[in-house]
Picture 1 (spheres, rainbow, N blue to C red):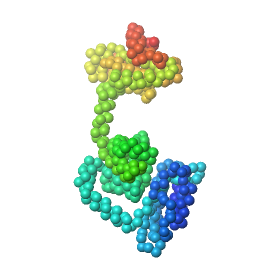
Picture 2 (picture 1 turned 90 degrees about the vertical axis):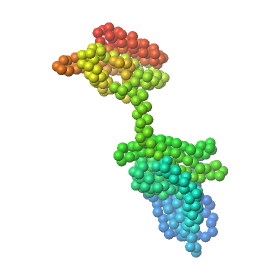
Picture 3 (picture 1 turned 180 degrees about the horizontal axis):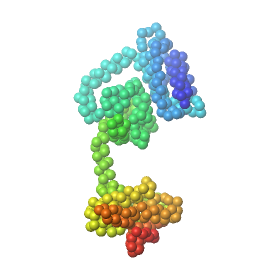
Picture 4 (picture 1 turned 180 degrees about the vertical axis):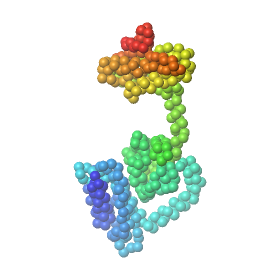
Length: 426
């Protein structure tokens, strides 16, 4: 695929040369995938005079095997004039049937004189907004600023490196975005950056939704990943048809986010065994029941530890807690992540077996659970046999959780009548 990236550079280079030096826009237009391709900063090259190339540089930002961003920078001089023009361009290239096609082109020429005026203007505005900016930098850890009008992209490199551990310099927002998504953002959180899609931005502007917030994980050398908050501020152009400016405000929220998630998890899990508590187990099971489409593929179990009170009286509460944790460990070893396993009471667990092949597999699993919850326990040369009673019911897809619980309780009563260490299925 290295050929594709090099072909992309060559095609972009040819398009730039054709546009600026031959005043021919057709090569660029013919390279576009369709008429709906975004052409930002591209106009009919009917200017007076000609340009000569002083320098050019092309950088490849790889997205995947069939897609990349080519960041181009050209320094050109107008013939017979001492006026230097800097051209920054970003071109999204894709491999379509072995041919390089353009999916958007963003090009910005800035005359050196205009650049000086622009910098002077921004410096004056920065003086006016100095206190405002100081407050912004106090509140946020990293601020990225982008102007669509002149394709300028600004940020504090030291602040960026401190938060994201990335020692890279970015010329364009496209170069930053794909590098950030590919090298920094957690693979499971990539969709959080959909806010930057052209269609999403256009719809937000139409609906006057100029602020978007998102929270996701980014790489960290010490912790692996940390949570950050991103606030995207969109400034539309005068006729509200496109983006004029964007501000990306990042803040490290790892400490409070981690604490919040821990609190949320604690509210859902049993303190001792760390499996789901009763209320959340029932909540998950109800969600599963709403999706059951066929009978004899799901089952619900109540697992009761036989004589746990006697164990506590004989060995003490700490031993009883160990027994419960050991049972949980053993059951987790034979079920699957798609199953729901929770603490139902002091000496009872609830288990929902989800989407097995048939009734025979479910019956085999119930017996397997009974087997792994039976084991010897030795303390002070005294050996006790730990075992459980199980009441199970097969889910038919038409019964609610309250009826299933009654069925399990009825089946559990039958298992206990057998003297424990047995199971009964309704």
